[in-house]
Every structure is written in C-alpha cells, then in structure tokens.
Image (cartoon, rainbow over all chains, first blue to last red; front, side, top):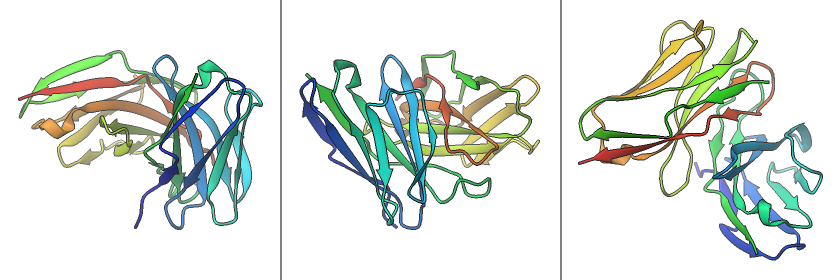
Length: 115
Length: 115
C-alpha cells in the first residue's frame, strides 16, 4: 500500500505570494492533518480534515487554510506569504478519528522557503 | 492545554549499547495516547511505538520499549542494541482520548549512534 505523498517536495516563493500544497493520504484513510515544522517552534498542528470538513484547527492566522476532497486528498493554502512561513509542512493521515484506529502516518513533507 | 517536554536536545550512544530518551507531559485527562516518532535525516516521520494510558503494561516493539509512569506523567523510550540506522530525531507526542487528531509534540531529541 502506498504511503502518504506530498507535492511538491520543495518550493521557493516570494513574500506576498500565495502557495498551495497537496497531500494524498494512504488509501482508505479519511483523516488528514497538517503540521508546520520549524527549528524554533518545532512541530505545530495546523488543522485536521475528515470527510471533507475541517474538524480541528491550531493557533495559526487565517492566512492558513485548507480543504479536503471527496477522495480524501487534501490541500493547504497559505496566502500573503511571510518570511516566517518558511518551514517543513508535514501531512499525516489516519484511518479514522476515533480511539480505535487513530495512528497517524506522515508524508515526506514539503519544504517551503519564502524569500 | 497539554504540553510535552523532552529535556534532552541531544543524546549519543555507542553502537550495540542501550540508550533511554526522556519525555514528560502535562495533562488533566485520565485517558490519552502517547507516541514516539522517529524522523531520520530524510525527514519522513515514522511511528516507533505507542502507548494507551489505560494500559499498565509498557509497550514494546522489538528493540524499542517504553517506561510509562502515569502518575509521574513520564514516558521514556529505551532503545536496546542500538544500530547506526537508529540515528535520527525522536519526538514524543501526546494525543487526547477524544475524537481529535491534534497531536502535541515535544521539541525532539537528536540521537547520534557512534560506530
């Protein structure tokens, strides 16, 4: 079974631009979560999508948004990029949200550099 | 809010020896889940081991085992017979019992394995 895939793997953008990152979960997984990883702040939860609905959101400004499609693939969008948005963005999928099958499997990440 | 603390930014171990990575957490919940993730230099996060708080027995996965002390809110990872491939960043993570895939991560411990 294929793992979580993220595209693109690397991205360079300029301040003020917007960017869209994509995540394809493991086949059959319905929950997709997004995390931002930086040297200073570590791993921080952005949001979670399940059945095309945002279920939970971390403490990030409204410039960060996402969506999930009917095939469970997810995208996250960052508008009006700032230098501080430079990070590794990780996507994780899990089968469900309930207590039984909640283990999250991570993708390789998208390295975003904002100049 | 739940917080996870890893007090050892870096650890080193000789190949074939044993090393223990520390993790403490703060929560008011009685049921929750704890994880150790490994992030090798290639950046893909891999689940190493998980522990359900309601289980008193410590989880083990081959050379990896945990020492879960619920009252002390401590969750350490022991790696036995360390191998060169164990070199990575190790993250301790907490997940609430509720239907919520927002995981809280510690800052990580960088493990070096010396040949």
